Length: 380
Image 1 (spheres, rainbow, N blue to C red):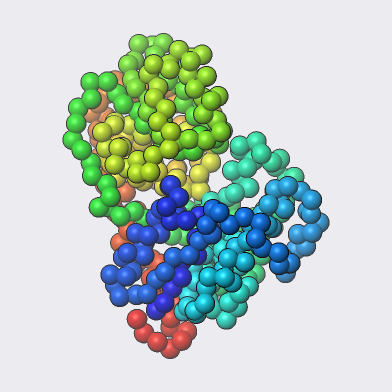
Image 2 (spheres, rainbow, N blue to C red; image 1 turned 90 degrees about the vertical axis):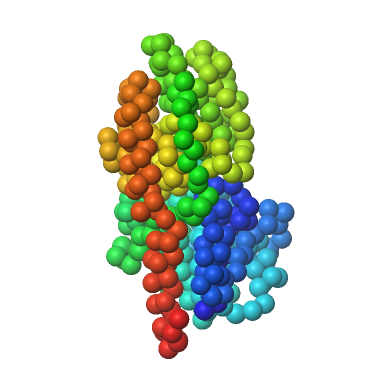
């Protein structure tokens, strides 16, 4: 079976789905399947000129809105690039972004196209203060979900909570399949160590939606109450200057290290003790599973896919969104009780190995792929 994985970002893009798909490709190639990757290079901008139309709504009512116009232009660019580069046919196309899936179905209407929706672009924009809830941009971006349902052959998403989120925007909620992300265990090498001072680590894009202001406030309370720690922040983004100033104002700049972007943070993570990320929303939260596979204790917010990964008190700790005092108390427990911290980390590692292994993803995705292989009367 010959499958095209249609990404939006190039595979070398840090984090998330783009960095995961090459490992999936490697597993399928070993199984004897044919699988190729396709994405839109960053340098391709404003090349497409073809008219864009959707069948379930008229996007032109939002014309002139900068966010909508940028989305439509990106659609045109993806269309232009796909026509330029794809010259062969595939048995199945698996899109990993709404634009990728819709473009592929437009150009190859007779080829089965499935999509994995990994996150909510509109929710991220709202949380980062870029658009208003129920504003024109929000209406346009959520209308895309109904267009996807109308056009593609199968919708997959990464958590039960995100499937529930999508139910407000599609007609047939039951058609959506949940397959959580998976991770190649060989990438993660837990390292036995004893840190005299508790080492916290967070890996994310530095934007408001990740709740790092709450984390800095909680760490300030740790210091005020005499609990030593070091906070390692890996990632970059528009909030970095504000967060660095906040660390200075809260008198924790000496305890806080801003690393910027790092290509393979999983190689760095095993040397720390606690992974903490107080996000305001996460469809899945891949970095929690990655941290668990590095044998770190987990602290996250009780939202979305995070709450599906962490069972509070058993394999990590959950706190309410935006509550720095609750986060402080959770971190304090892990600072003062290394045995509790280790037990949480071990339980998180056990769950991640069983639930988020790459083998599990391959098995579940293969069942979906085979549905379309059988339609041709062929066997694997």
